[in-house]
Length: 194
Image (cartoon, rainbow, N blue to C red):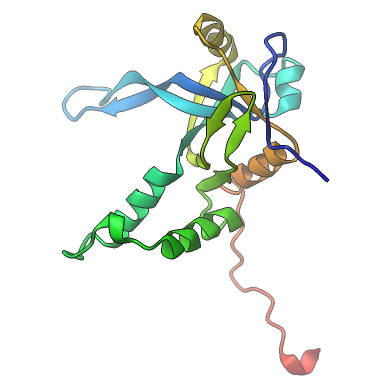
């Protein structure tokens, strides 16, 4: 059974959950130390994926869209191992074994890191990119009308669409960043009770 991960969004289709927008301008806050209100609004261009529920977008129930950063797996690997080895004077990222990198990537794939979601590599209709990561804690809110205008004004508004069930799985993982319940005492079953 074949479950493709992606397809290219048709121009006449509305924006929906799972749409990947490349180089999208997103708002960020630059912190300042000396002047009230101690931050300054800026924007950066960032690859993002739409996280707002498809049904809310389809039925016009939202004025703003939630987006999450889509980043490079290779950059995350380097950042992770650089941080892990920051006190090792002999460390060199180029010497990290492929097997060691794969173990870290496997942890991401299994969901061991709540803030990261692994996207499959893509080769659809001439669009290619390697494995990428959704940074679930790097989120942005943009007015829907503004986002639609940004897409309309882009020279090459090709948008890759993450397909079901992968987009729902991504959304499910995104929810873990907001709705986790830690129990003070978990169920403990003794072997003699079974």
